[in-house]
View 1 (spheres, rainbow, N blue to C red):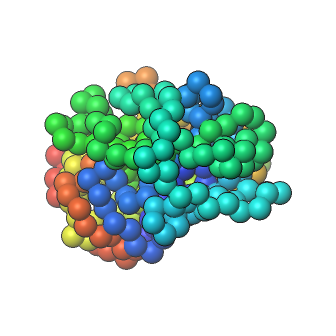
View 2 (view 1 turned 60 degrees about the horizontal axis):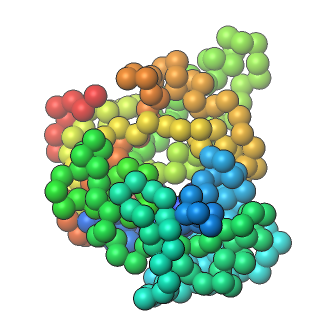
Length: 279
């Protein structure tokens, strides 16, 4: 098995970028989800409710800055507002972050077509991974939903595509194009495993970095938004509910918690260290 793809999403719920290598920090990949877009009351704008979030592409820039692009707008580069003004942020186990500044707020408001503030998480050690999500004392994450990294498998995605095609044939519908892996917003995607072999893992090594598996990833309706067209559909939730549903949720991928710092690179070996069963 090997690491086939690495992706970083500097701004939560926007389109991220693929990279050849990344630094693993205790809280996740360096540069991943340190920024979020919120309403004035601190409620996070998510592509689940605001699909236009996916029309914004966020790219890491030197010094922890982020470069933002969106159709019809000039690019903007935003530096971390170190020591800036605190602003409310409504997310589990965190209640505020640092406001980026008026220019960034105006740009994001124009990009999304609704009032928006861009916030930065100055201290990535402030937010703990919840115990119900596999967290232990000292485990932290930035602005990810519940875990520092998300791993998906190419073979699992192809099996899901097969199920979707089978369902379309049963309903007398045209077989759709295979789903893009980007719908699932993984940080790391692997190749060479059996479909859904990752379900049984409790520990895994990527290159020289070891990770615990915190939990399986239950999938929300964001996966039904095409990351290119931003159009919502029924898949993959409809098919996951048929083939991958237990405990009342639909599952695809696993969330990882780093055991320490290190570097990972596309092509690195992926080695399960314990497959005693996680489901």
